[in-house]
Image (tube, rainbow, N blue to C red; front, side, top):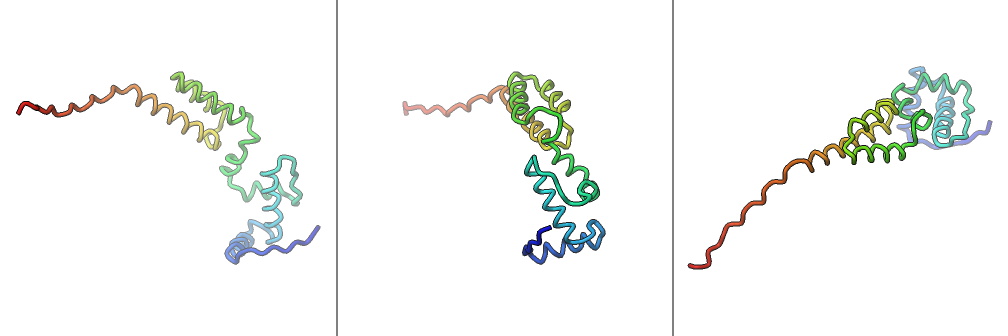
Length: 148
């Protein structure tokens, strides 16, 4: 291993030390190694974490909801922008239920892409509802009599 010195703010080190004291990590070094591996694995598809017991540490310290949210790119659903296009097409045709079914069947509810697609669908629904409302009548201008 290579030794590397990094400076951190005192508040960051204090938080890391509290995690070690709570037993979530064996040492500050384990925390730093795991954190670095975790970020690199999230950013680089080809990166393989090298921290000993990486998966065991990850399953212990990462909340389940966070793992689900971060797992979008590995999920078995269409690419996000294709989903946006498909939901948009259905919404523009007034097929809101079909768009909702698509989202429900392609994504888990906690997936951040599902949340964005649901919000997009909500906006299209609101726009469609607004366009179906009858227009408010124009207020009549007071007539002015010029014969006085």
